[in-house]
Image 1 (spheres, helix red, strand yellow):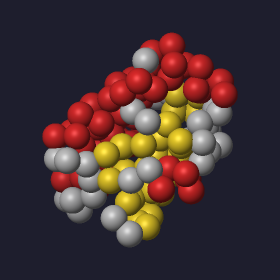
Image 2 (cartoon, helix red, strand yellow):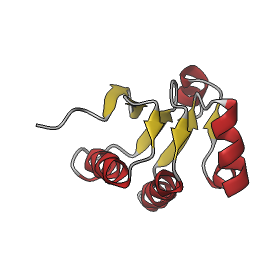
Image 3 (cartoon, rainbow, N blue to C red):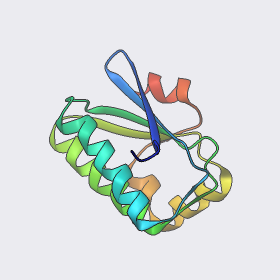
Amino acid sequence: MSRPLIEASDVGDVTIVRFIDRSILDMMVIDEIGAKLYELVNDFNRIQILISFKGVDFVSSWMIGKLTALNGTLKGRKGKLILCDVKKSLLEIFELTGLNRIIPIAPDEETGLKAF
């Protein structure tokens, strides 16, 4: 059995996802995270997702691609993806890649929850 990569909890209609690791760089790990996120959508019909980056220091471009794809899937199902608790260094990367223009970024979980 593999170790958990994310934690998910529901607050009403919103599922909050938190990462276990500080670095999300390995493609195989990112693919597994992607599979877990899509399991929430496809198997549990969770279409309002708030992803917290609290404690995360690094992400790869592969993870940014997964987030972009998930956002498209959720929009197609009339859902919404919001990111929160993004450190300044990660926010700069998200801004450089344009991720912040397609996925809303909230300063914290409380603000993110209110945005749904």
